[in-house]
Image (cartoon, rainbow over all chains, first blue to last red; front, side):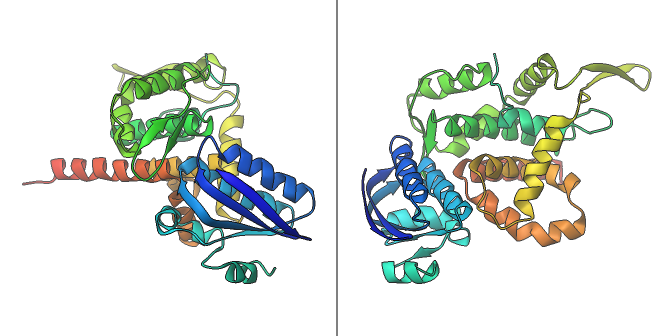
Length: 112
Length: 219
């Protein structure tokens, strides 16, 4: 799993790639926690290069969304591949966390 | 040995005990087994020992947790040569309801959370009851569940999982009035769906109840 970030003040786009599972989710949590601590409270997770998300991966998305809200911000996901989208849809994540097709749509969802 | 905090399996058993009598309130035995099994699997997932996806439950770390019940479950999963979905494991482990329930009750007594009492029933039969010593653990768990239900906050994974177990065992029915249940029904469904093991617990419990209903229906 790879990750990189583009920061623009309180809004940050965080690119994830590969698998988000038990072994990689701690790094995702640490990266996003660091962004929140640095004052970037509106987080866009770019999921276009993510190929697999396990339950531990879903859990970390939930955790960082909670942390973003606690910091007065928000978190949205965009660009999910169909197999990853299926995992999020079955879990009903879209009812709890904004999920968008494109970055522009995700930005609109969190008012960024 | 057990974890310092109560595991999800411990918590759901505490929640299932009647406050006054200390007796277990069960939908039926099969569901209790499934709920405890779900609690053990969920705890292993939260401790990073197992993970799941839509197809399978798998071990990612065999390091013992230090909790006898969890470690026995982890060893059992690690020893299975084939991968199976989480619902398979929920059903398999949950089938040992009596053994699991006795083990959880014994450790809750050992930790001073419950006390064991022998009671006479119809002057002849004896049955055991497990009144809570302080009731603090139950109040704390119920408080977390109510806070989760009556807010739109993003849920904590542990509370999400506990809510699924409370729903399947009927514990929520004892906590909510009909009016409250109506208000939060959508929230319950949305939160319970978030966790794959939680969904499996619900599915296996439904299958067991359907099989039971089939068995007792007049031909």
